[in-house]
Image 1 (tube, helix red, strand yellow):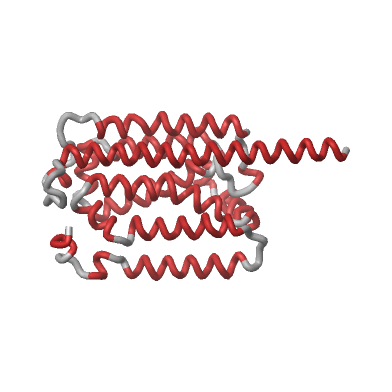
Image 2 (cartoon, helix red, strand yellow):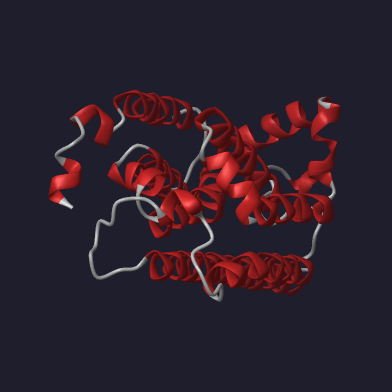
Length: 264
């Protein structure tokens, strides 16, 4: 591990441009929330999401996942697609969410966002297609195409999370029970891609099978299997957290209704 890191400069290991971008985002958020009533919890969610985003894309994890370990690549994807989007959405103040919703509503290209089933299918279909070996090997070998694929998946990941954590009340199209079913559906749709990776008899992804081994005790197939397990575990944790969030919101709404009925 030390020898591999020694081959790269500090700027290659820790992306300074993304770090500066992260600082700008933090500063912009801090300035913006002064104008709105924002809870400590929302600030924590947003800040944690930005930190995770930098660690995923700007730290040595990205370099290792890009060139050496499929498991690191899958951890990066799991964080960027399944953890960062819901945390960011939970951290956005309601007033900003309403303005963002208005901007989305004016753009016909984003009309699919108001159709939860389409958002759900688009991310999972693209994600599954991306991990078909013939497609994956071609994309990873082309840096520009690889980056474009990541941006595309990140966009559709946000679209997938919006029906669960809407930007505004107008986008809140699903009931608590429907949101829970939506999450279970997302888990089912993501499972085939994870199973393909975990239960494959041989290493499927040439760039990682032929890459120098960071850990001598780990074979390419074991690395591949670990990647699938990481994605599935992170998915279960993220989706479990959201089901808990939905349940507590539902319980709070019921308590408020009961309190209003008592007052009435």
